[in-house]
Amino acid sequence: MLDPTTDKIDPNRSPKRWRRLLLNRWLLTAVVAVAMYALLGFLFAPWILKRYVSNYAAEKLKRKASIVEVRVNPFLFTFEVKDFVLQEPIFV
Image 1 (spheres, rainbow, N blue to C red):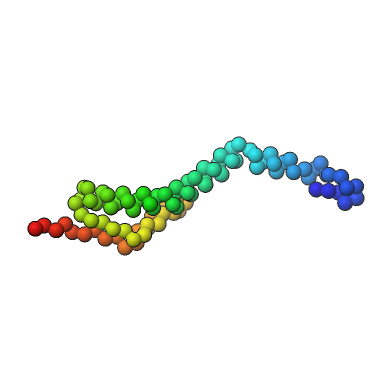
Image 2 (spheres, one colour; image 1 turned 180 degrees about the vertical axis):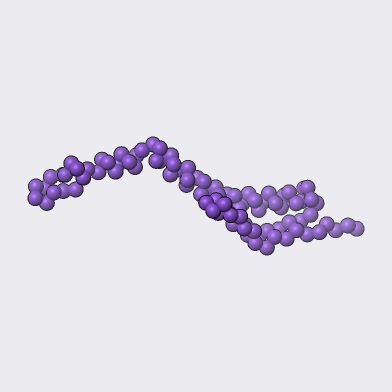
């Protein structure tokens, strides 16, 4: 910050402290890890679960399964499925 009386930079309010904090390797690693966890949990996990349930039902149970919506919250550890249908096998 500039001191209005002398127009000099005050060394006690130097932005170096904030820059050092932001460039800290451990802080950046933690931020990237939380961002990746959120990305995988909110976007990738529902996509995988939707496909895995359909494939598992077809291969192992010999039935057709369908899911309209899957929601995962990795921070609250919740998992919600909307309109899950597992059809009975047809025997002829």
